Image (cartoon, rainbow, N blue to C red; front, top):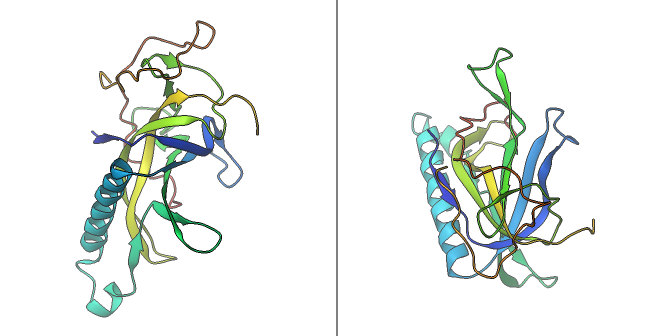
Length: 209
């Protein structure tokens, strides 16, 4: 069973949450960046960096020292700078989930994944999420290594997204809880009853970040 984490709140950047992006992955890839700043974002970044360093150490521990030194740390976030190269204080986190994952329970050997969306009152919804919408994610961390670039760390596997401010148009038993004053779906938007997060299992269908 995967260990799930709630992200900080932030702004979704180029979200592919309603349907998977197939431009570089024929099976489809859900993904979104999340821009945020402040103490919660800094803590999230520190936790992720610690997990990435632990995985890199584990992955290279049996290598000869000369070979281990060739490997570098992969982090699924970056600290943004302005046009003059000065830190902005904003951290951009990257979340991803393959639309098809391996499953021994399916006759085909694969399971189709859909990202569950909820509003600020924890209602399951079905609405288009555009760039600039605000909210947070439910995710798990999974160790990943890419031999071609000799990098290793963790990937942030996206499970759900909570939308607290919806921008329209323009280009578990474990729920999220509620957020006062946030986006609330009307009856046309609302989907099914709240459901527990499903453990999609390890995503081993590709080595891409």
